Length: 288
Length: 112
View (tube, rainbow over the protein chains, first blue to last red):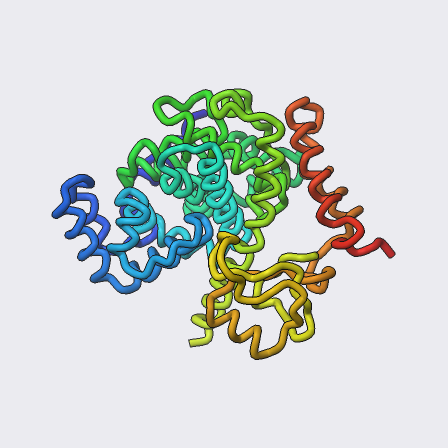
């Protein structure tokens, strides 16, 4: 019964079958993340690709990162960190697909990025930008399933509608895996650091996370709050159960959640605005 | 009071809160509460890259905007699979309370 899962995993791990990524990606992956000259070289490589640079800067200026005025790739690397910029570069083509084909999922992803940043900031956690990025990327597996298994995706949607279940339950039934695991495979195939791939892989199963449980718990809670809010469309309309492991890991209480809800609902107006502006950009581009 | 994207602002709307250049509310406001919006003022706010403003009443109804009752029914539907769990029941109550507060007397549309 693991046949479908293994077949899908093979597709994911063969990066040549994935959405076309800019040629700079392999160059980026060959550079060390820590060496100063490598960081400068990375900025130069990315900046030389104008389309990629524009995509990264647009994402870097998204509400997920708290409205930085980021105008260059070098600035983005300083403000957001190398891991975030590399992650945005690697995932930019997937977000392009989301914006065009799955606006609801794109809005959901933006919302979870914002909520993740808000939770991390409120709890005083380090690496807020990485946590926001993990939130932004958490559902990339859904895009891949849609692209690579379109028949299975239709079946998943039929099961959701018929049985009124959460998406991952339908996915488990149809493809023997789920979007979180698929997203985790993708993150690993891109050599994203564990601090990003683990929250993606485990955002529906916090207890399975290892070294990055705090980040995973944040993304898990953020996802639930955005679903509760009704912002965007992640594929099913149901709020997931907040897992005890996440609640305990972050030492949450009702007052913290109430404060977060208040601040988050306020922020979501900005997110909607950002999404509308991008849609206008897409519509304009389509007329050329 | 309603928070709206600036691109949805129209002449005649009245600001319900001061507008500041940055997210933080210290410093001198660009534009004060109770100011009535004009074309030139909206253009100036756009030039300053203001993303959103608070206006009096609830003048902007996007497609699919709901009454409080409809919104609470939608909330029920979203929570239907987890409402029986004590923790999720509390989260539901937090959202319901927020919606009643923000869509209540001054912010929400009355059911017909």
